[in-house]
Image 1 (cartoon, one colour):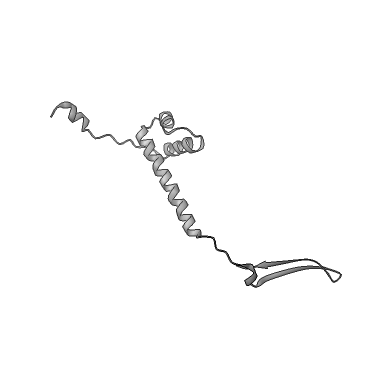
Image 2: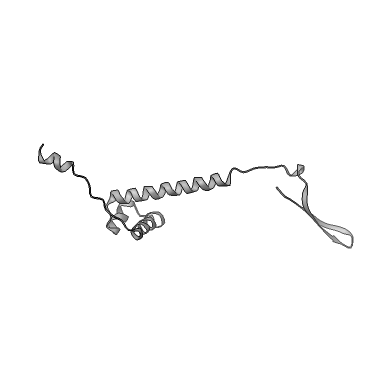
Length: 106
């Protein structure tokens, strides 16, 4: 094998990124709308590493969103006319009805 193919087959070194840098990267990309490339340059992180961090964050946020929506379930509708009022408030002044309000429990 030639030396060029040996150099091409080298394994990339893993770059350890601290939690503080991850939070800063997330803040720059999502809140201050920097591109991933410019934010990684500011924080001295490799672009590929920054891109994988951002993709993991996005996947986690999507999973949390889906989990919350599954937990809440779909909206349910019930016709009010078929349910019994649980509370009815009437305002009377000297025996005449001023206003009336009915509250239903779903």
